[in-house]
Amino acid sequence: MPVYRCSIPQGLLTDDQKQQIALEITDIHCGLTNGTPRKFVHVTYEEVAPGATYVGGERSTASKTIGLIRTGRPQETRSELVRQLTDMWARISGQDKADILVALQEVRPRDAMEWGELLPEDGVEAAWIDEHGLTNAGVSAT
Amino acid sequence: MPVYRCSIPQGLLTDDQKQQIALEITDIHCGLTNGTPRKFVHVTYEEVAPGATYVGGERSTASKTIGLIRTGRPQETRSELVRQLTDMWARISGQDKADILVALQEVRPRDAMEWGELLPEDGVEAAWIDEHGLTNAGVSAT
Amino acid sequence: MPVYRCSIPQGLLTDDQKQQIALEITDIHCGLTNGTPRKFVHVTYEEVAPGATYVGGERSTASKTIGLIRTGRPQETRSELVRQLTDMWARISGQDKADILVALQEVRPRDAMEWGELLPEDGVEAAWIDEHGLTNAGVSAT
Image 1 (tube, each protein chain N blue to C red):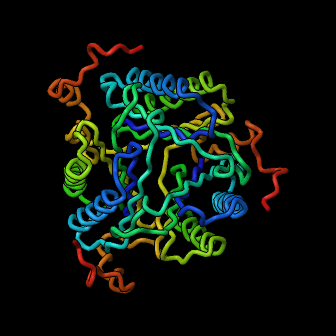
Image 2 (cartoon, chains in turn red, green, orange):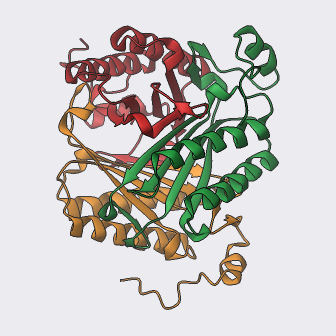
Image 3 (tube, helix red, strand yellow):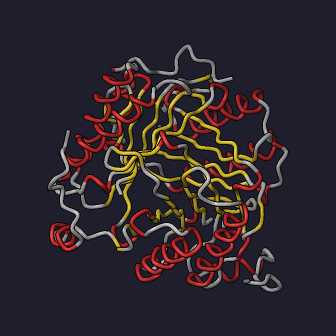
């Protein structure tokens, strides 16, 4: 975690754009949550055919990114996350902001397991990351 | 938001039925949440192949609709939403209610961005909608 | 409910493995939540193409299982669920635990409908199950 799931219209993004957005989601998330190891940031794209998505009952070309983050991030961080993710998405995809939705859901750290470990609670994160050798050192934050 | 994601067996619904259900989800949501602009109601279908979904460990043909709504709707509204959505789904799809699951999750308004704006909190919604010219006026609620 | 949604790399699992994991998810969930009817446990697989999923901005082969369970399960149960699900997934899929993520989200029983009924609250579950003839009697827990 986090896990960002992006529901996009078929053909909206090239593979290069998908990778670039995945990198920038990682940059934004790690930049705002100070200490999240980059290799914890998952991004998955799901392409949706034209007849399979609607808004207001009419066919839609909106992109919907739902992020699953751990509890404990302050409101200011969460609002800034959706703001920066929206701006970045508009810039790379070329979509109008009227067609971009970003929302965050929360999961308690003790309700999630990764790398065979329950996620660390707020406050013990640094020690946990250190213990598991998961610092960002040596990983360029492009 | 809201975003309704419908996981359905491959071939269950025609394109017309998908559009009709999307319209009725919009009608039901806006009818019960008094003031939600229709163009905020997203519906996405995901078709699942026979070997890819199970219930009790056996192959399943159930439909599962998970709605992401904003916090602040009263319990009575939320229960009525899942009740009306279930009834509508049974009527249009022809599925037995034993094969229909509907569930709601909540997202805080300040954790979501659409149209380039954080979603409005409870109580300031009407002013927000007015300010952004998103009233339902002129949009027929078929 | 519960609904377990498994996002997996394309080709990771055979149909037999998918069914086996669905069975074991059912066993684990029912074993730890004492009283959940087996026919309430949904499992859906979503196969993701190589260029469609990333971790830390690089292509990923991780599996991500997100479970939607009802509120009211104690923390100990929830942590034990993700622990046993991770162990089982590693054993059947052969994936390294560094490539396995399991997380749980909660839904209030009155926010969900299945079999045409709102889900039962904690404490009245047994009576509800009995009333609807949904005991596990006669269903082998393989």
